[in-house]
Image 1 (cartoon, rainbow, N blue to C red):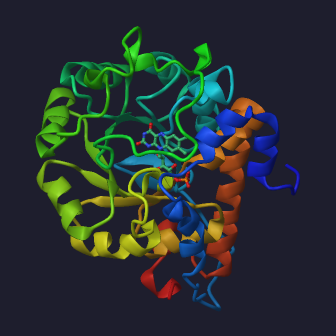
Image 2: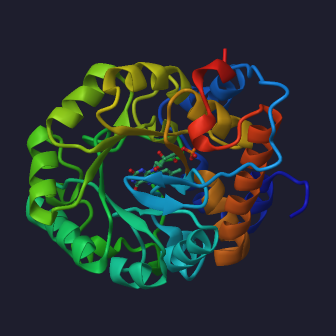
Length: 337
Ligand SMILES: Cc1cc2nc3c(=O)[nH]c(=O)nc-3n(C[C@H](O)[C@H](O)[C@H](O)COP(=O)(O)O)c2cc1C
């Protein structure tokens, strides 16, 4: 990897409309602009004189062992970034010892992705026609998904300044909708998405459910009361309600409200090992990264994805060691102000 920033290198190889679709936020892009700054604003308080000759990044998420607490966030239409789409993402993620959350808006069939993947979770949008999304959940369970990640912050897709993609090439086709008109409200996110959807998807598949897109303690508890087994603190990469509280600011409230009931994960603007350290110190079990994976995929397919994840894991290990912290379990609240 060169020292030129990852995003700039990816931008140089992507068609402009695709780059803008991946990079954009919603509204005035206030949340998008806040994310990384909010992580940087938390200052670290290193421990000293600890033996850090052996530092591990290994952990578990919902009981699944992973080599790194850096997981892959669900993002749509990897076929726009690389001809192999999510199959390449799955391969790179497996090689990095991480876990893939596969978007329901994928370009490739979930069965093809499952064949290339290590551990993976299926992200779910509940659609107006529940039958269509339920079918995806059933297929995912049959193909070996270890959990469903139900996105709860999209009753409908927020306006983006970049606008919709001007023209979707065949590589961008949403596989789960195969042959259906994506403009038909029945095949769009359900504005009446509710707690009963969490319960139904769990019952239908027997899989644990992770609620993605939580920014308040009381809302996290509502998700758990509805049957969720874990929550992801997320602003959807600054692509839904603009002006929301940044993930690192919301995280402590959610962790406090959830207590020992469930694992809490976080995403949004996580770009460095010191960001990962801050997230774990604030009580997250693991983090997810979205855009950096897309940039890696665009630049180098499966190898590019693996390199991005390996780099982040290596910088996480460094951050741990320099902070006097030897493992994810050892990361505590004392490490951040
Ligand atoms: C291009 C793009 C597509 C996305 N598609 C989905 C999706 O299909 N489902 C979902 O739950 N989140 C989706 N997200 C949100 C990500 O899962 C994640 O919350 C966010 O990207 C994390 O922030 P980061 O990109 O700053 O790392 C998408 C994000 C991007 C950038």
